[in-house]
Length: 342
Image (cartoon, rainbow, N blue to C red; front, side, top):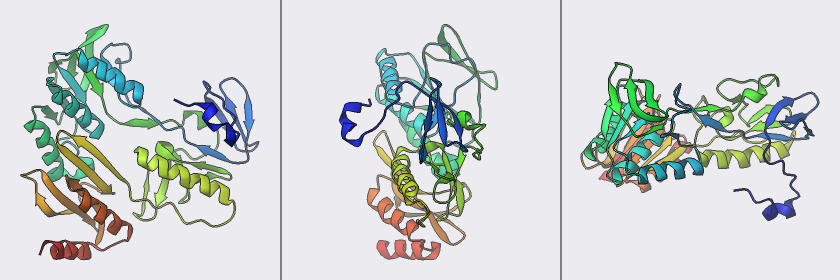
């Protein structure tokens, strides 16, 4: 929770409990929900994103999304009520963490994913199946290749209706199907909006305006890709970079070229992924084995090392994360792995 008194020495002016509703680039003003106009010399937009939901789920008790601390506490309370079955909609990393947490409380869990292989978009089909099998090994019912049509219940959720007509009993439903960038208030601003605020390689969206975090979309020249990264680590790093960019004025500044990475703890596995992977990347297991669920896999594309996935292999992830930033070739990455293994 924000405590303005902690920041008195920084001479902040707080406007708590209000929303930004409009941006005028010509007058350099931000209009608040109170009607007040705030003038700026420099503007950092960090309005983040909100969770996607299922139609009709808003008024049903027992249905949750996970975005902040209040959400986490509400889900924990729901789990402590010992529900008969938890259904997780979406097998991304948020959904998978929720499913793992529920199973560790000995709750019955079903995880529903519309893609044929969970985590395929990020990890690829082979590695996605490995992570799905970790969940199956721990008793999670993993349902793939099918979507959710609707939720049923009288005030409180009772069933999840799949798109093929099947129904799953559910006392608690957690929806983890992605987020929507909070850009609606900028629709008439003149900024380019396309799945986020479109910035240049230095996070500049317009003169004297930068964006950072989940709402920012920028060309990361390290990967030759326009990306938007949904992870708190990037929000911290990009926020600091965006502030430096704003203060630099017309002085040139190096582009923002992070190697995205994140981690997740699921059951007894610490899973870390660094880089920017695609389902069709070439992959190579460089240590360990998928059978023991302790391994590291590198990803290559167009003779470049572009990713590293580790299951309980943090040292390898950090080592290859730096190699990605150093633009190491795929051939050199494999040669390095072979040398380390010999």
